[in-house]
Length: 310
Image (cartoon, rainbow, N blue to C red; front, side):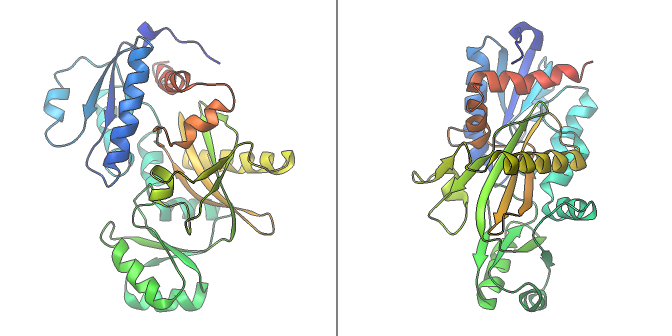
C-alpha cells in the first residue's frame, strides 16, 4: 500500500453536489471524502458545483481536484474538460472515458464490438419500438435512462403495458432510453483502484433489482465478500472487468457491475468512473477487504493525480 505525504498534494478542491439527479448521493460522498482528507492533514476544501460556482473557484489556488460528482455534468466529461483546460490534475478518468462510461448505449456497443458479453439490448425512441422490442427480446426486461446512474429512472417490466409506462417514465430523465434483456442470476460489482482489481462483492436484495432504495436506504441489502465464487470463476470475473475498463480507457479508479446467469456466464452491465463513497458504498467495502481503510482509499485515489504530473 502506497504511503503519501499530505503536503505533496498541495491545495485540494473536492468537487461534489452538482445539479444531476444524483446530487444527494454526491453531497454525502463529498462530505465523507473531504473529512477524510482533512483528517489526514491534507489542505482541502469543498466545492459544490451548483449554480454560479465557477467564478469563485477560479479565484482559488488549487493544485488538484478530487472529483466525487456523480452523474451528468460531473461524471460525463464536462468537468473533466474544464479541468483539462485549466491544467488542473483531477481524480478519475479523462474526458473520453468519462463520456463513454456515462453513456450506457455506447459503452455496450464498444464491449460488443470486441466480443465482451453484455445483455441483448435496444433503444426505445417511440411506442412502436416498445412493441418490436417485446417481440424480439421477450420478457422480463429492464428499462434504463442511458445517461443516468444510481439506478435513477430504472424499472423491471414484465408486460408490454409496463414497458411503455417505464419508457415514458425514463424519458423524464433522458431522451435516450435503453432496454435490456433481464438476466436471472447473481449480481456482482467489482472495483478497480490505481489499476488494482479489488475483491468482487455479491449483492443481495429483497427488491426486484438493486435499485436506488437498495443502494442507499434499505437496511436489509446483503453484501457478500468474499463473493462466494470459486477462485477460478472470480479470476475470470476480475479479468473480464479489467478488460472492460481498458476498452473504455478507465483511469485512476472505477467500478463495474456484472450479472451472472444460472449457467455461470458473466454479463457486463455498466461501468462507473466516479463511484459512490458514502457509508453504503461498494468501493470502500471492497477496499476494506484488502486491509485498506477509508482514509487510505481516499489518499490512494488522490495519489493517482500525482502521476498526471509525471
